[in-house]
Length: 328
Image (cartoon, rainbow, N blue to C red):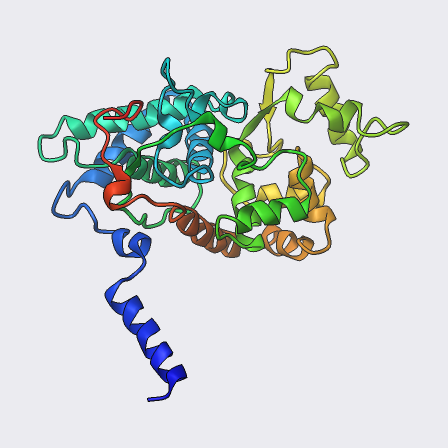
């Protein structure tokens, strides 16, 4: 056997006998013999929370994204700070995470722990992944099978958040670069951005687009003029920057492809939303999904599945927390 063929054979054998720990660990039926009813239990608690407040939807979805992009999908964003450690959730970029997302995970964890067979057998990271799928479906989006088997992370530092999350001011290059660092393509990024179809934002996150865009041009020219006037009415100049408005002005309580139609009309709230249409490289995808919800749903499921594989903890790199907000 030639040296080149030998190297290929060895590479194949290494993949066969030592598969990627992430892909080997994650599987849809992970809890079949551990806590077989895990999905129904989580879904029941998420549904109760959803019936109490719609904020459960964007709060849980955003919590999952912010968790996965910082040290992977390991529930490290749920950890509370202590006197000796400032955790991820207290970083400035995470202070706007709504409490309803955290509460959804905590309530689902309590419901699982009430069943002896399931107590402390399901990770907080997996509960968050399942809850995220459930809030998407409850708000009219696609349901999908969730890969399970994540462990909870052993570290949560606010310093790890620096530069890991997309900013509302990002252009396409910066968005693509950040998502590529997490193994996600431009198509994945555009699909995941559509989570803003059910989100809300504080006025301070986009006020530059309606009051101080550029010298001599206070309003961003890519912003629909009527929409800009509406935004100025909802967010006057001296308003409390914590006042929140819907990110999708048309169907704010439905997970749908209207997000892309809004971009076509110049009604993306953030620069990082509108750039998906204004940049010629991403515009064809926006146009395609604006007219084809099935194609968007399929791409969204693929992107969420890939997102759920980011930085998964296995073996000694994680454990199953007894309390989602504190290390064991």
